[in-house]
Every structure is written in structure tokens, then in C-alpha cells.
Image (cartoon, rainbow, N blue to C red):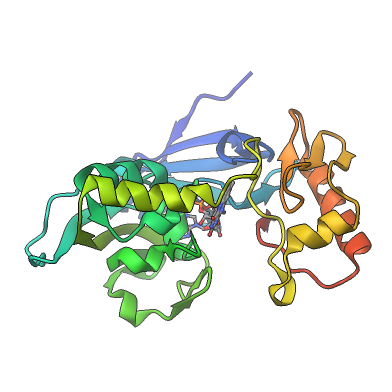
Length: 290
Ligand SMILES: Cc1cc2nc3c(=O)[nH]c(=O)nc-3n(C[C@H](O)[C@H](O)[C@H](O)COP(=O)(O)OP(=O)(O)OC[C@H]3O[C@@H](n4cnc5c(N)ncnc54)[C@H](O)[C@@H]3O)c2cc1C
């Protein structure tokens, strides 16, 4: 029998749910999931040990689940205000607030329709806005911090609004501490046309040809010393290698895909096999929870 959802004092929805529902890989055991709609609910959710979940597109969650709370951003944190703010100029469009829980692909579709340029390089990243900012997601065509004007970050100590210049950021990294939550951002973009923005997005998307379309948490390993991790795994003869229902993609060796009922333990076993067979130090691209 599934327990009915609880309400926290603040009104946040609290449910015990399998995290496989929220990860692009589709694996992960249960945790207490707090879906929060406003700052009061978020404050209460942060009163015990927690993790913040975005689009689940960079995670392998353990089959045994998690002992900590998992916070999901809903309500006002999933809203998008793309009205031009008074900070806008003839060249630059500055937006209202965009919630950290907004799915990035939907936001990019809206920017394309409005002819607003600056985030085209993040096309195809299946993240939420907050997760994409936290790790400065992107591609060689551009990254999340390219379009940032202001951020709001919540932590147990309070809520702060910052300019990106307050925070060092770099390649797939920002200085936002772990479990500080990106609740909202404002964008600074160039005014262009839907056709030009669309053409840039299509160019960035074309570079994804050959990536598998199956359930996956994206690339498994960072490229060691500039060498392609996928090439190293391919040369080790591991394309198509399967453990349980997890497989090293035959299309692109740096992707592990879920064939249906994969367990996190299958993915861990494939990661160990890759490390052993490739024989050089390779750093994991995605996060293992816990
Ligand atoms: C098919 C595929 C293609 C991909 N391509 C790319 C690519 O081209 N470039 C790229 O950079 N990445 C890529 N990724 C990886 C992934 O999309 C990025 O790492 C993304 O930034 C993860 O965001 P998320 O919202 O899904 O975060 P999650 O996977 O849910 O979480 C990842 C981390 O972000 C933290 N986090 C999530 N939300 C917030 C928040 N609101 N505030 C603070 N921290 C938060 C989590 O606590 C966790 O530490 C790809 C993944 C897939 C599945």
C-alpha cells in the first residue's frame, strides 16, 4: 500500500517516492521527496539534511535510495517571466525571474520564438534551469553563464541575490556551494530574430548526432587530458558491453544506457569495468547519489 502524501507545516508536499521517476537514466530507490512551491516551504524543507534535485539528468541514484530529504522545485520556482525588465537596453534584453525548477528545453523553445540570443549553446541539455546554472552546463557553442544577469540562491542561512560576477565560474563548474539552491535567475540576452536563434540552435544540436536516444545520464567520463573518453572506451573494445540491463552504447561509448530494467548496481559495475579496461585515470562526469 502506498502511503498518502503528507503536508509539512508550511504546506510542502512530502511523499516517499522512487527517484527512478525523476532521473533520465530511470534508476534510483526511494527517498522522502519534498516538493516545494515557495520560500516558506523551501525553508522548512532545508531544516534537515537534504539534497536538491533538478532534472535528474546528471545522476545515478543508488538502488537502496537515500536517507536524506530530496527537494524538488515546483510552484513559483517553476514559473517563467520573460517580460522585458527595466534594466533592458536597445541591444540587450533583461528578463524577469525564471524559476530554478523550469525545464531548460522549454525555456529555450520560448527564447527561440522571441528571437532572444545567448543560450543557444545549451540546446539539448535535458536539465532544469537551476541544475544547469549550478554546474554551468553547456557545449562548445556556449554555456549557461553566457546568458546570466542575476541569480537568487537559497541556503539554510537565508536567501541572497547575486550577480554572476560575484561567483567565479568555469568549465562545467560554478562556485555555488553544494546544496545551495538556485531558486531563480534573470537572463541577459541579445535581441535577434527567431530565424537566427533557431539556426544557431540547430547548429549546436547537429553536434549531438551519434548520441544515443535511450535513457541515460549523459556522458560517463570527462575527457582525460583532452583525449576523448569515448574513443578510449571504444578502443578498449567495450562498445555494446552489457551488465544486467545497462549497456555501453554501441553508438557512443561514453554513454551508458538503460535497456529497460537497469539497476544502479549494473551501471556501477560497467563504470568499474571501463576504469579497469581503459587503465588510465578517468574522472566521472555524473554524480553518484549517495
Ligand atoms: C542526453 C544528455 C545529454 C547531456 N548533454 C550535456 C551537455 O551537452 N552539456 C552539459 O553540460 N551537460 C549535459 N548533460 C548532463 C546534464 O544535463 C547536466 O549536468 C545538467 O546541468 C544537470 O542538470 P539537472 O537539472 O538535470 O541536475 P540534476 O541531475 O538533477 O543534479 C545535478 C547536480 O545539480 C544540483 N542541482 C540541481 N538543481 C539545482 C538547483 N536548483 N540549485 C542548485 N543545485 C542544483 C544537484 O543537487 C546535483 O548536485 C547531458 C545529460 C543527458 C542525459
